[in-house]
Length: 382
Image (cartoon, rainbow, N blue to C red; front, side):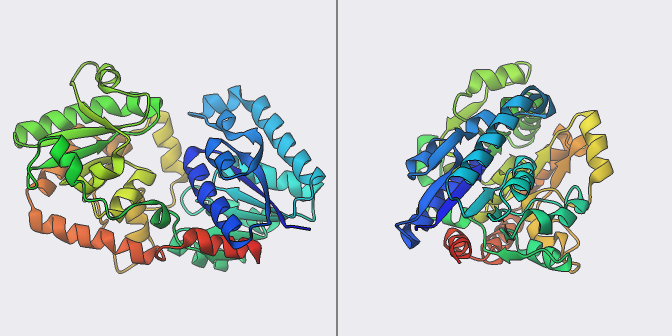
């Protein structure tokens, strides 16, 4: 009988990784049977989805409470399918909160199923005690950040570093030249790419800060051009309203990686975007605003010096690298003046930018090079 693998994902970023994984599994073993929890991307790879993961995409704690019964129904549907259809391996892609509950339910109700967590939960950042549950929940944890395997080894958790799937998913031949032509910018003109977030809540929270930051940058450096990368469904009017009509931004859609490659420097919200930008060698300033309450909770549970992924990978667990690679401003530190000053200093120092660019490009090697999806698939099929 052909091996039957169930692939589960929640957020869109996880589904992108799951899509590449499903494609690779089929290449390595064409007769394999794939089912799962996912959306259009996973179904396009021939995965029989028992539920739609878009139901689980949420904005915050309030949405979790509102969707409690949806989460419970989807979890039960997944368990019933796995138990009743001969699934022998379950691959949980990121989305650790829901997936830890799904793994616990499977341990009770389907104890013979092999469970693999693809993308290690960030226990090292928020709640280190979570690592103690991992040997019970998972037969294997596939790590995409190089320091995670060492931390898991210390705790007796079976882990494998497979590399980062972004190295398979990004097109590093992109130069940004076409975008500069479309913006009528010379190759040496100063361009600041802005990434305020992809969710409406993030846009509402970050737009006033970004608008004031842009005003300060353009006052200090009048010939700079600032362009905002927006998610589908968002536009300049929405950003303007979210900022309190403080600006009328220039926006682009579906060209984020072009903007990373084309920009002199970036202003980027902390998240996966910062790692994508780092892999393009884009100098950046990282920010993230939090409510007063969220900042208190963050401060209480914070276990790392740095928050942005480039800094975490390059220097968080390296005593020889005490200083961050890129400036980051989180919570009350994220002010228009702080972000603008850091960006202006970056724009005025071409040699420092080039040094930073080389350090960021080194992350490609530290992340294991291309082939993460294939290495992950080989572990899963072993």
